Length: 113
Length: 114
Image (cartoon, rainbow over all chains, first blue to last red; front, side):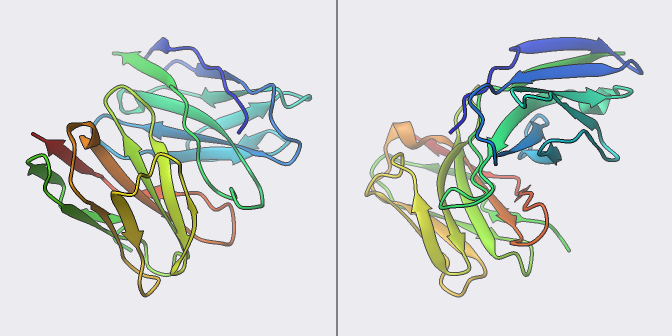
């Protein structure tokens, strides 16, 4: 499994953009980059994923470095409901580990009103 | 679609007892995963099924743990002779084989072994 490095914690103010970084320098060329988040007392929730190109959905944007060794999750306008632990997870696209998620420590995001 | 459900939500048991948890995935999802999460840590993969076949088991899953998905629908996770170290949140997730295979998680079953 590819190793990931994320900041232990980050803080933001409500309505401001948040950029959550992740280093995954040992990622395989075929691994997807998934982001999940876990709100307090809930199971993890899918946020976004990508392979090489930047991706946007209703929740967030994902910017992937050209060498794929890092990525950044962007929340365009943080709300109090975005306070959660955010996990960056390289995921095999095939083989026996297809779809299996290997969670790291994640980044605890605190959003101030 | 009601999402992934897990029962019970909380379980307190005495050391040495057996416990069984149930997971009902999103209907028609082929894949079902079990994870375990201890306080302050990210979830750890335990095992997964594709339909009724158990395709992978983590080394974390000792012989006291067994999981089944007999008809490719709901799944059960049984822990025999529970130990205090088994205290954790047990999470279930399901996904489809097609598309982005994003996983949908249930609320978890919190196990406390006294």
